[in-house]
Image (cartoon, rainbow, N blue to C red; front, side):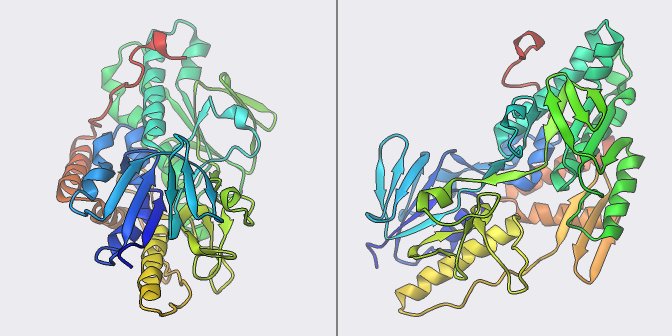
Length: 420
């Protein structure tokens, strides 16, 4: 098996866990990703809201495997898969032959058929997305400071987040804290405490994947932070001028999207069925139907638990799937057949600003300060490297003690004149 070639597409949680667990397996591994870094997505919103810098939640993939000579890392974008010739084609024309293929290509934003909203309603999946949101939020305050028209000033100081899942709730909470607690002393012509942060959810409650008791706590915590929560009505129009909710139009210059995701085109590459979100429907061992040498994992895959419920698209699930596929490859090398994949739910966590969070561990449900500490410890534990853990812990401690965010830099485009 020394010549057995495993091609892994995607350097997210699932892909990295797979490569890590294949250490010593006697196989050659090629890891392909369109970016040169692994991203800790659960903390991406903290880059977007000026709490953390980009280097604190991302690591160069080449560096992670610099001591693994059997691992080749390629910066590339996959354009297709030929299962007949067992090859992967990259957009630059290169072709990779595989013996085993693992697609862990993740997901991107979904605008429910309104892709024209994308330029004004920024999603949050990459570092570029996070720095774009950060730039737009900070520039909104700068524009408000110089605006002469009161209506324009109010629009600049109105921040709308669409979608009240964990990402939307976390964004809304931190933007409200930024406006109401961090920035008031830094501006002279505006009172940032008058900023409006509006969280819009088409469903009946925030954080719908949590039990109603915890959702109610999250709603109260958001209200205490000054977040205005709109429930039960979807956004029907989204423009550079603002959003339409039912009969009401709300002027806003900063809109963030956290309402839906769409899987990568892996199912189309393989010619296999997909669910409504584009996730490839896989077998119980995470292989593509009729393709025993092709695995699909993470947000790219639609996996059903024994109970009939879908495996959630969260980092622990992707890591478990990556570890499982590594076990399958090990077992096949020994001529054995491994059991079906079983997802073990490790709990759900969400934070709502500083010192407020919820945690659902099944029978044990927590809210408030204790849940916030558990949330923080869990996230620090899963970061890569001692330096990152120390850096993030220090940033959080500094903010907890001083209330000051340290990453308030306007990057990519540096001036208001450049911003389109």
